[in-house]
Length: 249
Picture (cartoon, rainbow, N blue to C red):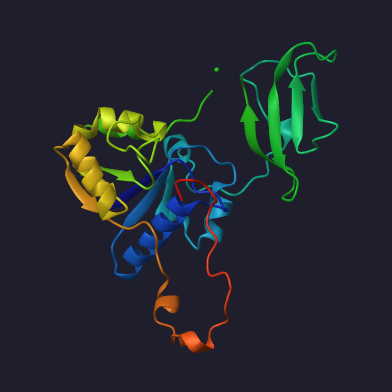
Protein backbone atom coordinates (compact mmCIF):
# COMPACT_ATOMS: atom_id res chain seq x y z
CA UNK A 1 0.00 0.00 0.00
CA UNK A 2 1.24 3.49 -0.90
CA UNK A 3 0.22 6.37 1.37
CA UNK A 4 0.26 10.07 0.38
CA UNK A 5 0.05 12.28 3.49
CA UNK A 6 -1.54 15.74 3.38
CA UNK A 7 -3.39 18.15 5.66
CA UNK A 8 -6.58 18.12 3.63
CA UNK A 9 -8.19 17.54 0.24
CA UNK A 10 -10.65 20.35 -0.41
CA UNK A 11 -12.61 20.67 -3.64
CA UNK A 12 -10.42 23.61 -4.68
CA UNK A 13 -6.92 22.35 -4.00
CA UNK A 14 -3.43 23.66 -4.63
CA UNK A 15 -0.70 22.13 -6.74
CA UNK A 16 0.10 19.63 -4.00
CA UNK A 17 -3.38 18.15 -4.07
CA UNK A 18 -3.40 18.05 -7.87
CA UNK A 19 -0.07 16.22 -7.88
CA UNK A 20 -1.23 13.68 -5.29
CA UNK A 21 -4.51 12.98 -7.07
CA UNK A 22 -2.89 12.63 -10.49
CA UNK A 23 -0.29 10.31 -8.99
CA UNK A 24 -3.08 8.28 -7.38
CA UNK A 25 -4.94 7.98 -10.68
CA UNK A 26 -1.75 6.77 -12.34
CA UNK A 27 -1.37 4.13 -9.61
CA UNK A 28 -5.03 3.15 -10.03
CA UNK A 29 -4.55 2.77 -13.79
CA UNK A 30 -1.67 0.34 -13.26
CA UNK A 31 -3.35 -1.66 -10.50
CA UNK A 32 -1.26 -0.26 -7.63
CA UNK A 33 -3.07 0.37 -4.35
CA UNK A 34 -2.88 3.82 -2.74
CA UNK A 35 -4.57 5.96 -0.13
CA UNK A 36 -4.40 9.71 0.43
CA UNK A 37 -4.20 10.29 4.19
CA UNK A 38 -5.54 13.66 5.43
CA UNK A 39 -5.12 15.01 8.95
CA UNK A 40 -7.35 18.09 9.13
CA UNK A 41 -11.05 17.61 9.74
CA UNK A 42 -13.21 18.57 6.77
CA UNK A 43 -16.96 18.43 7.21
CA UNK A 44 -17.38 18.28 3.43
CA UNK A 45 -14.57 15.82 2.85
CA UNK A 46 -16.66 13.00 1.41
CA UNK A 47 -18.52 15.38 -0.90
CA UNK A 48 -15.25 16.99 -2.04
CA UNK A 49 -13.88 13.61 -3.12
CA UNK A 50 -16.33 13.63 -6.00
CA UNK A 51 -14.72 16.78 -7.41
CA UNK A 52 -11.44 14.83 -7.71
CA UNK A 53 -13.06 11.67 -9.12
CA UNK A 54 -11.90 9.75 -6.04
CA UNK A 55 -13.85 7.37 -3.83
CA UNK A 56 -14.02 6.80 -0.08
CA UNK A 57 -11.79 3.73 -0.33
CA UNK A 58 -8.93 5.85 -1.75
CA UNK A 59 -8.87 8.52 0.98
CA UNK A 60 -8.48 8.23 4.76
CA UNK A 61 -9.22 11.20 6.97
CA UNK A 62 -7.74 10.60 10.42
CA UNK A 63 -10.84 11.95 12.19
CA UNK A 64 -13.02 9.53 10.26
CA UNK A 65 -10.61 6.64 10.76
CA UNK A 66 -10.33 6.86 14.54
CA UNK A 67 -14.02 7.62 14.96
CA UNK A 68 -14.98 4.66 12.80
CA UNK A 69 -16.95 6.92 10.47
CA UNK A 70 -15.24 6.33 7.14
CA UNK A 71 -18.43 5.04 5.55
CA UNK A 72 -21.51 6.78 6.94
CA UNK A 73 -24.52 8.44 5.26
CA UNK A 74 -24.16 12.15 4.52
CA UNK A 75 -25.77 14.42 7.11
CA UNK A 76 -26.14 18.20 7.02
CA UNK A 77 -24.75 19.92 10.14
CA UNK A 78 -25.95 23.52 10.64
CA UNK A 79 -24.75 26.21 13.04
CA UNK A 80 -27.50 25.31 15.51
CA UNK A 81 -26.29 21.68 15.58
CA UNK A 82 -22.78 22.49 16.84
CA UNK A 83 -21.98 21.17 20.33
CA UNK A 84 -19.64 23.03 22.67
CA UNK A 85 -18.35 20.31 24.95
CA UNK A 86 -21.26 20.42 27.38
CA UNK A 87 -21.30 24.20 27.73
CA UNK A 88 -24.80 25.71 27.41
CA UNK A 89 -25.66 27.71 24.30
CA UNK A 90 -28.15 30.54 24.64
CA UNK A 91 -27.70 32.34 21.32
CA UNK A 92 -26.42 31.43 17.85
CA UNK A 93 -26.80 34.23 15.29
CA UNK A 94 -25.22 35.29 11.98
CA UNK A 95 -23.08 38.40 11.87
CA UNK A 96 -24.90 41.36 10.34
CA UNK A 97 -22.24 41.99 7.67
CA UNK A 98 -21.11 38.38 7.24
CA UNK A 99 -24.08 36.00 6.97
CA UNK A 100 -21.72 33.07 6.42
CA UNK A 101 -20.33 33.54 9.97
CA UNK A 102 -22.36 32.78 13.10
CA UNK A 103 -21.56 33.90 16.64
CA UNK A 104 -22.33 31.60 19.58
CA UNK A 105 -22.86 32.84 23.13
CA UNK A 106 -23.53 31.20 26.49
CA UNK A 107 -25.93 33.98 27.47
CA UNK A 108 -28.57 36.02 25.68
CA UNK A 109 -26.80 39.26 26.70
CA UNK A 110 -23.85 38.29 24.50
CA UNK A 111 -21.25 38.63 27.26
CA UNK A 112 -19.91 35.04 27.29
CA UNK A 113 -18.53 34.28 23.85
CA UNK A 114 -18.15 30.63 22.84
CA UNK A 115 -16.80 30.95 19.32
CA UNK A 116 -17.49 31.48 15.64
CA UNK A 117 -19.14 29.07 13.22
CA UNK A 118 -18.54 29.33 9.48
CA UNK A 119 -21.10 27.91 7.06
CA UNK A 120 -21.33 27.32 3.32
CA UNK A 121 -24.25 29.46 2.13
CA UNK A 122 -24.23 27.75 -1.28
CA UNK A 123 -24.61 24.24 0.17
CA UNK A 124 -27.53 24.13 2.62
CA UNK A 125 -25.72 26.33 5.18
CA UNK A 126 -23.51 23.40 6.12
CA UNK A 127 -20.90 24.05 8.80
CA UNK A 128 -17.43 24.31 7.30
CA UNK A 129 -15.36 25.34 10.33
CA UNK A 130 -15.79 26.06 14.03
CA UNK A 131 -13.42 28.43 15.86
CA UNK A 132 -12.96 27.61 19.54
CA UNK A 133 -10.24 29.92 20.76
CA UNK A 134 -5.90 27.91 21.99
CA UNK A 135 -6.68 25.40 18.48
CA UNK A 136 -4.16 25.34 15.58
CA UNK A 137 -3.80 22.98 12.65
CA UNK A 138 -0.46 21.23 12.19
CA UNK A 139 0.94 18.88 9.59
CA UNK A 140 1.57 15.20 10.27
CA UNK A 141 5.36 15.38 10.35
CA UNK A 142 6.01 14.65 14.02
CA UNK A 143 3.51 11.81 14.09
CA UNK A 144 5.14 10.16 11.08
CA UNK A 145 8.52 10.08 12.78
CA UNK A 146 7.06 8.32 15.84
CA UNK A 147 5.47 5.47 13.92
CA UNK A 148 6.27 2.04 15.37
CA UNK A 149 5.43 0.07 12.25
CA UNK A 150 8.03 -0.07 9.47
CA UNK A 151 7.45 2.42 6.66
CA UNK A 152 9.50 4.16 3.99
CA UNK A 153 9.01 7.86 4.82
CA UNK A 154 9.85 10.68 2.43
CA UNK A 155 10.21 14.42 3.10
CA UNK A 156 8.80 16.22 0.03
CA UNK A 157 9.88 19.80 -0.78
CA UNK A 158 7.14 20.96 -3.12
CA UNK A 159 8.35 24.57 -3.18
CA UNK A 160 11.27 26.71 -1.98
CA UNK A 161 12.94 25.54 1.21
CA UNK A 162 14.78 28.81 1.90
CA UNK A 163 13.23 32.11 2.93
CA UNK A 164 15.58 34.13 0.70
CA UNK A 165 16.07 32.82 -2.84
CA UNK A 166 19.20 34.95 -3.23
CA UNK A 167 21.00 33.12 -0.44
CA UNK A 168 19.77 29.55 -0.13
CA UNK A 169 22.89 28.36 1.69
CA UNK A 170 22.68 30.49 4.87
CA UNK A 171 19.23 32.09 5.04
CA UNK A 172 16.49 30.78 7.34
CA UNK A 173 14.43 27.84 6.16
CA UNK A 174 10.88 28.22 4.92
CA UNK A 175 9.04 27.87 8.24
CA UNK A 176 6.81 25.16 6.78
CA UNK A 177 9.88 22.91 6.63
CA UNK A 178 11.70 23.99 9.79
CA UNK A 179 10.72 20.89 11.77
CA UNK A 180 11.59 18.59 8.89
CA UNK A 181 15.10 19.98 8.48
CA UNK A 182 15.71 19.60 12.20
CA UNK A 183 14.85 15.89 11.85
CA UNK A 184 15.82 15.30 8.24
CA UNK A 185 17.96 12.24 8.99
CA UNK A 186 14.92 10.48 10.42
CA UNK A 187 13.50 10.27 6.91
CA UNK A 188 14.53 7.71 4.31
CA UNK A 189 14.21 10.09 1.35
CA UNK A 190 14.25 13.82 0.60
CA UNK A 191 12.38 14.72 -2.58
CA UNK A 192 12.88 18.03 -4.40
CA UNK A 193 11.05 19.36 -7.45
CA UNK A 194 14.16 20.37 -9.44
CA UNK A 195 17.77 19.14 -9.79
CA UNK A 196 19.07 22.52 -8.69
CA UNK A 197 17.10 22.38 -5.44
CA UNK A 198 18.29 18.83 -4.80
CA UNK A 199 21.89 20.01 -5.24
CA UNK A 200 21.30 22.97 -2.89
CA UNK A 201 19.83 20.73 -0.18
CA UNK A 202 22.69 18.23 -0.43
CA UNK A 203 25.32 20.99 -0.41
CA UNK A 204 23.87 22.76 2.62
CA UNK A 205 22.63 19.90 4.81
CA UNK A 206 24.55 16.79 3.67
CA UNK A 207 21.57 14.58 4.54
CA UNK A 208 21.89 10.88 5.28
CA UNK A 209 18.52 10.36 3.60
CA UNK A 210 18.56 9.54 -0.12
CA UNK A 211 17.92 12.63 -2.29
CA UNK A 212 15.51 12.38 -5.22
CA UNK A 213 14.29 14.85 -7.85
CA UNK A 214 10.64 14.39 -8.82
CA UNK A 215 8.85 17.23 -10.68
CA UNK A 216 5.65 18.45 -9.03
CA UNK A 217 3.76 19.26 -12.23
CA UNK A 218 1.69 16.73 -14.14
CA UNK A 219 0.59 16.94 -17.79
CA UNK A 220 -2.60 14.89 -18.38
CA UNK A 221 -2.30 12.14 -20.96
CA UNK A 222 -5.03 13.60 -23.17
CA UNK A 223 -3.01 16.80 -23.53
CA UNK A 224 0.37 15.10 -23.84
CA UNK A 225 -0.92 12.79 -26.57
CA UNK A 226 -2.95 15.40 -28.48
CA UNK A 227 -1.90 16.60 -31.93
CA UNK A 228 0.52 19.49 -31.77
CA UNK A 229 -0.51 22.80 -33.33
CA UNK A 230 2.28 24.19 -35.55
CA UNK A 231 3.80 27.40 -34.23
CA UNK A 232 2.73 29.27 -37.37
CA UNK A 233 -0.90 28.40 -36.66
CA UNK A 234 -0.91 29.44 -33.02
CA UNK A 235 -2.55 32.63 -31.84
CA UNK A 236 0.12 35.11 -30.72
CA UNK A 237 0.09 36.81 -27.32
CA UNK A 238 -2.29 34.25 -25.81
CA UNK A 239 -2.08 33.02 -22.22
CA UNK A 240 -1.14 29.36 -21.89
CA UNK A 241 -1.17 28.97 -18.09
CA UNK A 242 -1.75 31.01 -14.97
CA UNK A 243 -0.28 30.03 -11.59
CA UNK A 244 -0.27 31.67 -8.19
CA UNK A 245 1.42 35.05 -8.34
CA UNK A 246 4.11 34.88 -5.67
CA UNK A 247 7.88 35.47 -5.63
CA UNK A 248 8.64 31.77 -5.21
CA UNK A 249 6.53 30.87 -8.27
